[in-house]
Length: 208
Length: 208
Length: 208
Figure: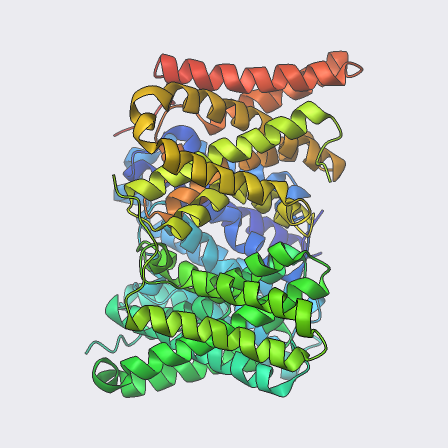
């Protein structure tokens, strides 16, 4: 079963799950979790955002119960990370961030379009797209007992909001080219995220 | 769309969302979160309890997806708090606690009556009223990585239980005056909460 | 209302809720929570895993809303623990771990069979059985602001997975003896859990 008909989205959805899973395993390694703990942390990171979305809009059973590929991708992310863990710090960091940004973009569009199919308004669709993209990491951080990175670090969830806004602006002028709207939205999320990492963009903090 | 037909409740529901939102922003400021982090924290504090209630009883999509006023009130709470943040410590603290108590009372009655409309028993209705009133703050504290205040501080959730109990007692003797039952229930929650703050009432702790 | 028709399972379900509740109260005592805080912690520990399962598969309202015995058992666990709290460290520890293991086994089979009744695949059924058995403790630990024990300590969730696997293997060869399949599954979970405690079995941790 596929979330969205178009194959490229489904493929990137699985890749996003895989990459988000890796970030869970890496945090699990840092916290000296055992291998099953790492699997659970990878699992909540990879599917947590979409699960929260599905529960809130009433799309049940939640998506990963109807397609075992998601759990499979989480398993692959655990094996992959443990195999290459000594390489991560040195060579893989850039690629990991890039794939994470791609996953963020794809998860945002998936959440957004799923909300629309449930007849929700554009504002709520952007909220759910952002939630799909970023709340897996929030649950990961809560379970590892640290304050979620999303609250302090570089622009992350904001990239989802930017992408979602562009999606609806484009839909107003070129709704007939839906694939392009989707593609550009994903690119906006990725671009905002990667540029904020490169130039250390941060949102204002209002310290007193 | 309104949760309950009567306008005063709806108005106080929005005010409760606003005040609970403020408590999220204040904690976000303390934890040096960026502005979007503060918005998310305000959001979970303001609508988290009701969201949990709606998910558990199957009222989906959850309430804030059908009425954008809730998200708007959260936005207002962020702007308001940042604008007046230097005034809070000095002058606003009492008013904040008072409005928080009002929000607590209103959220309790909303949760309670929603449970009844879903054909749940009085005991479960009290549980859900308490959850609606107090679990937004629990999620806020978990996301900010501290032990929820509800577990240790002055009487808080207990005020919801007291109000819920009074609600069913009154319903046994004066069910035909529904508005009065609602009004008195809210007053009981507010009174228990404010008196416990004034006189530092605490529940027993059984330290060994 | 009963989750599963057979009485022994229902009885052990209540006992599991009671024992899981105790572990919540004990942590609440350690964290100097007040009595209502302890009740909430006992509540989330006792019914949290099953609640999460019910929400995700769409079995709403969740199970404890339709049968007050669960809330009653939580209340009993609070009174019981506070009454005997000075005895726990010395004499009760072994019995507590044994009953916890029994609760784990029973919760696993309940989650597993409920998933099957919702037409989910064996893999998802094992995931949901494991979640039912072990996520109450995860929520307990998150609310008490510590990293969930499940991520680091002796084998716990793994016992659920082992039991779930045995369940489907047995179902392949002796499905007609359903009571026996259930009984053996529960015994496998208990045995794996108790043996891992006795011999300090741990899963590999891949420290670098």
